Length: 112
Length: 114
Image 1 (spheres, one colour):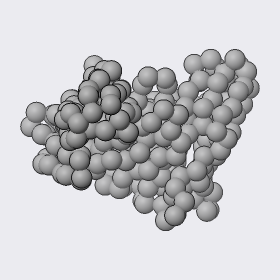
Image 2 (cartoon, helix red, strand yellow):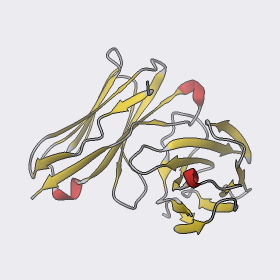
Image 3 (cartoon, one colour):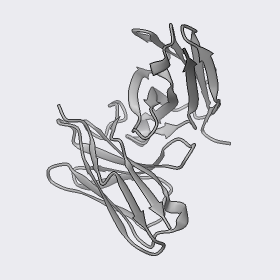
Image 4 (cartoon, chains in turn purple, green):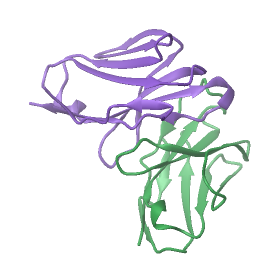
């Protein structure tokens, strides 16, 4: 079993839809949770960074962390064609320094 | 403010050869981590350098080695290349090796092994 599970999709939604992306994990020691966006032939771009449980909002993006369920989510409101990309969740354990553990990534396509 | 830069962008090698990839961290960052991303997969951690030392290592063989220079830039070396080493190699930088600091990625070097 992988430490971080993420549905690879692909996920296709119409423009303006609310998108929900999710990851589950098995290591209860994870404390830092990130979402990255990766366009084709580009490196991952940091979207959201949260510590422990709770919600964080940045513009159209909201990240949620539920440590009791070992479940994290990223919501995208009013999705745009420019949001079409692969979304990667990542997490790290305080005791392991900067080692990030990534999910497989979810491919999202927003249709005009 | 320059972000993380990697060179070269693309590289083609044959089995058994050796390769060196280079990374310059984001301005103000002193820690460099390297990841391997196979097609359709998430990045896998190779190792991290801080204060010119390897601080952490993932599950990669000794064929993978690295170096960090006094100006915080870094190199990833892979010896005796195998077909399975074909991947996107990503460099990420952060301020200190603490897990509390977010990592910022470059656009990677795409390595193809023939």
